[in-house]
Amino acid sequence: QVQVVESGGGLVQAGGSLRLSCAASGSILSINTMYWHRQAPGKQRELVASITSGGYTTYADSVKGRFTISRDNAKRTVGLQMNSLKPEDTAVYYCNADVWHMGAYRNYWGQGTQVTVSS
Image (cartoon, rainbow, N blue to C red; front, side, top):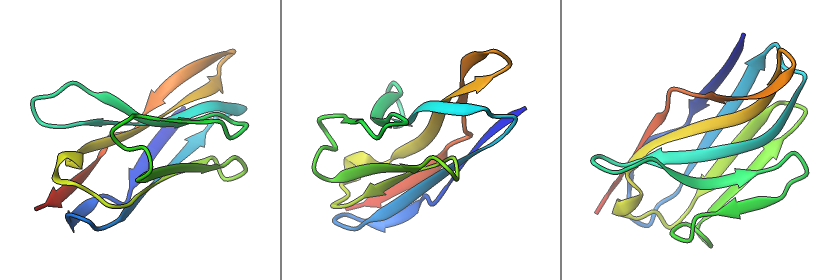
C-alpha cells in the first residue's frame, strides 16, 4: 500500500504566505515526479507545480515567482511554499506522486488540503 498525505492548508489574508507539505509512505522503492495540483470551486483541477527526483521544476504561469516547490528524496516529502497569495489561489490543493510500486510507476493522490485566501 502507498499513502500520500498533505498538510498545511488554512485561511490566510491576501498577500500572506502558507507552506504545504506532503509525505508519501508505504511500500515504495522510488518516487519519480511529485506534483501539486489544485481545484477551485466550479473549475477543473489544474497543475500548479512539479518536481522530478533530480530537482527539475515546472510551474503554472499563474504562480511563477510566487510559489516554490521543493522535495526531500530521503524523507519522501514534497513542499509548496506559497507567497504573495491572492484570492484566486483559493482551492483544494492536492499532492500526487509517480511511485514505483508493484513493478511499475503508479500515480497516487492525497485527499487534498483546503487553502482559502481572503481579500
